Length: 522
Image (cartoon, rainbow, N blue to C red; front, side, top):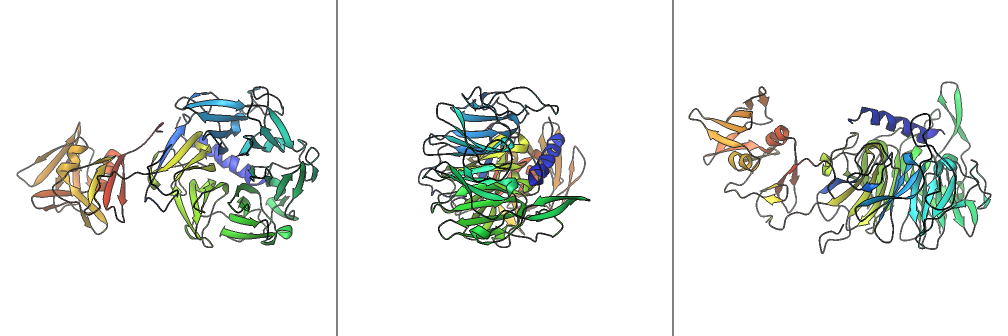
């Protein structure tokens, strides 16, 4: 194995060692970003511990899940890559659909195998990308076995294409060869497209035959000093002449054309199958002559200026957008109307926290699948969890004609409106303090004392220095009195209680204060 596959694995394992042990609102447009200003990222299944156990969503364990898909019944199908299994989440239970534990390798991970047959007898090697066809079959990119597999509705596993020996050979499906295919996509007609990752090509399986759509790379680069290996390349233009660099994600749009996550080139490419052309629709960067890959980066904005870091799984949304698992940026990105925006995760920061918008974290997300009603599911590989992102529903009681304070889903009643000052929102001390469990005492010396348990804070209007039970604190701006009320920056409470604070702008004009979300939420 070489390339991004190897690089990503090394980074992922290092990250793991560093970590401590749906229906939506009625009438909502079927869109991901445009309808609401905030999204919630929450854990859907998995404890976060490495393991292979089935059971409830709250107790089940995963091991580096690498792919997700949604079947016709709305069930979430997971390629549990590190466990060599395909798992299904339905009715709040996680069950193994196919794949068996045949032992452990020298590294303590479940051993790989290759066997067809009933689901409880089948064996896989690093199953990764998934797709569900119109017959209800789960199509699996069985990467380590260099084959494409299918799981029938009755659980029987068969090989669709590939011999199990790595190579690049077209022809009859049973005689064709692949090299570490990481993703698949299935057209309504039943045609299967394959991201043949380490061959740097896109393949098509149709009527029992395999064909290669683009030109294989003839490039080589010095991967390590003195070590020269074949690598991918980059070229847009006619499909037959186009070049890719470890393509790792595929998605079919409503026109029957293909989006490709061209991982090593840090780009999203588009294959117009009728026109026979390949174009870059997002991302960029130079491919140095002496390097295997374009250097990863993070930039939101215009598609041609956007930058990615190992984009992997992708998913088309009904509003014409594209969700992108930007794996080494630890974020989910969204491409629509020529603009790339981050919709989940804090770019460049790996973590496991649930929460709202950019206060929530991911760790090496490798795949994403659209669910519906603006929601999507993520294979959060580095956290050994399956996560779901849904639009945040603003309480109907929020009026929008004044700045309001929300604590979780509760609108706080106050006779004094929050006040914005130079980009900082100040809130009445008593209202917010009492809602969060503090007591407030006003001293004759002009000092207000805020207490909760053993913690206390002495606050003086006009001073950014706050005395506390744990030492002095410095606020970004000084509190002040207005209309006989003390106003404090809302982030004072967020920092002291480890809360999420978001400003809902636009027509809403509200401050959202939320308890940090951990554990199983949906």
